[in-house]
Length: 349
Image 1 (cartoon, rainbow, N blue to C red):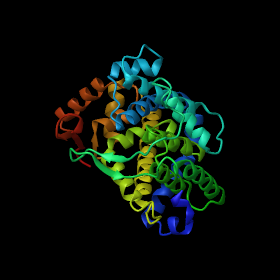
Image 2 (image 1 turned 180 degrees about the vertical axis):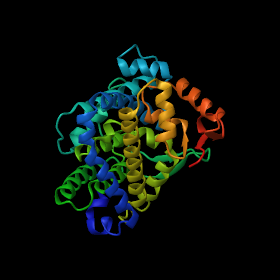
Image 3 (image 1 turned 90 degrees about the vertical axis):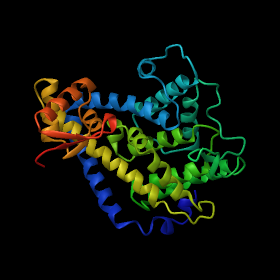
């Protein structure tokens, strides 16, 4: 709510470079319909891969992890859950599937938020779908201690603040007070500052981010996991939120650290999307040929193995490793580092 009280103060002074990044994202958004018409089967594969990645990553950000084999079974259905982590994993599956299956966008509302929260915890103990009834805090254990990072409004303030936030956000959208992505970023800053539920605030905020992106026409959230990209830069994610929430209660905060993070994350998602679509549309031959063609013709000069995985959904890690080894042995690429963190460089670029 605080971010929308003084729109001119909040949205004025946008960093100059952010405008160019927003324009680039809007260009990518404009090409989505073309890809959807020309490559429907490929987009179906991308959307399923993004679904699995989003469920896994958004839970992992909160240290809710499930072994890969079990995760696949839960994504596909409702096996007998073995522990709480599996139940929460299934809850995020249900919530993201609900969003993706909606045929029309309805304006955001508090009941809609609570419905998503109910889905998140429907397999656990029925605590979902309710606002908090006791104070909560945003804490960090980075130092090995219980450090309070931010103290949200208490349980008596949060219902009013949440209602005002939604109302002011919808007014800002209607009046086009800023770029849609800037407004979404401000919404999430305020939502997480209010911290309206006892548990699951981060996951709820990421679900709402996806919903609002789709509602604003940024369909890339269907095909590339925004949650996965956040998980891979988790430290920057938390740091940008921390910087944007300082002095939030006094209304003296700035949304731009978090907005910049979100916009760059979305820009990277569009880059991934176009690489994957290009690779899927132009490649032919065996899977090894597709990997080889992507690396030599489409990958950036320096890349990581996970970048190839993203660009070529459906091709196994073993196949990608085999091609990387063959290209390295042939002297066409070289590696720096070992394991998942290794960086590969293409010679001659």
